[in-house]
Length: 611
Image 1 (spheres, rainbow, N blue to C red):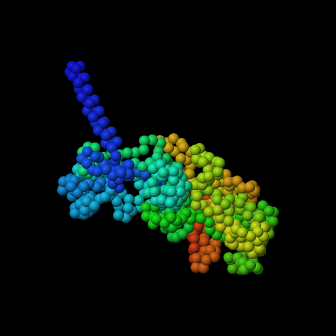
Image 2: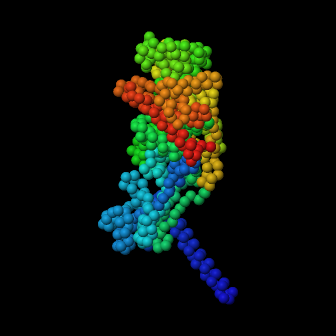
Image 3: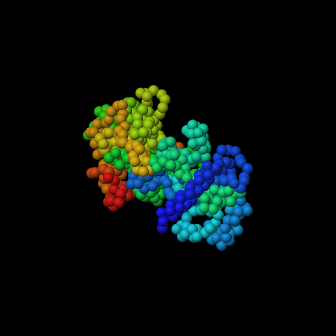
């Protein structure tokens, strides 16, 4: 071939390419019409044969996602679904055979499909009737659809926020439409057109506390082009538009193990835990490995209530005998008792209407035996030897009566993240004494009932589990962490959440006091109220609790908080079973043992052993 012919061919190819590029640019620059039917500029233009329109269908919100500690997705699940776009009644969709195949794939009759396509006012995905989210296509359905030629019907990628058929994780939370919150938090973005009242925002958990970080740079759309008469443009009818930056959406890596979380959810359900919580912490750094809250919820079927589901793992409840650990610590720190002191329990305290749970009493017991047997007489008496301030200050030293979850205070930062920031924003602080009155003036009855974890005392399962970590660290209080780091979409690190110590203005309890409490919790299992836990996979230690709710007909709250294995502690666990019938076996203790067995099996398998 001559040089002249080669040059001619090259010129022709270049010319054709320039024409195609000009055509695409012309389409893109023309005013487009969204699903609502309004032009992008807000003014309607008369339809004409040369005017182009587009309909937009959202494929992905662009919101950042959560991952578990091993990288497994907690949010953000991509799959392919069937998209339907409206066309004028005069437009031909396709052959009768192709439409019949489409109807069969969708599981409806041909006539019903025709009515559905005719009634379309805006683009939509083929939705599942139960969940209301786009239906996932099987590989076989995709293959069949690939052979059809139907106008206004396309197989498109869709990104669901939550997996279908799985319960939500309250610590992660959920997203929902909340125009009032959009107005409050994103007023400037609304004015600039970078936010819309229909946008979803975090409604609870990490979804809410990290909402501004997770919003991303914008959604992805499928744009379907038609001419002025509504007919599709052959070969140029569909384009996909995504934000241009490769850094988003962000990936937030949590401390949760998804396989363990799901296993413990299953166990709680089989155990019959109707209301309550299970919290599992890594004792080395107080990382939250799992947090189960009952009742569960489906993030795809929320009723629109602004209150939403509650995370019982961070709500404060009357702790009952769990608080006896604080009372003993306060008495040892104040020097009003010693490990060698002996107490006599006759079964009745003699005043304030208090009695021991064991009819006839425990007789002569040491301090350690009193904790092991959870003797009310011992701890009511110890509390009356203390001042209210001594009890309150000891509780503060141990991380009770205040929020303990990982946070950044005003002026603090973790990389580009600035405080104030609290990951577990719903966490309740709990209390030792009620608000009001003179803190130093409490009656003997108030002190006695406080000493056994009643009266006004409130604590959360998270605080109870963290109390175990504190005692294992000799009195050092750590902030339970739910998030490890946040990364860009390409893997670059944006921010790391380092472990935090929660300091008290009153300092710490002594290591000797912490050791005495640990020995007492070992005695709880070896011969006390937790002896049913002796035949578990690990040697365990902990403290049981039964708390009166004070509400007629509501039963008692049952608790167990502890750790294992005793010789080389790995996990701290707190279990709360709410509103249990009076006199019923401690469901929390039984579930605690099952949780520890699951943790032992998980460690032994090596499949996801914590580093």
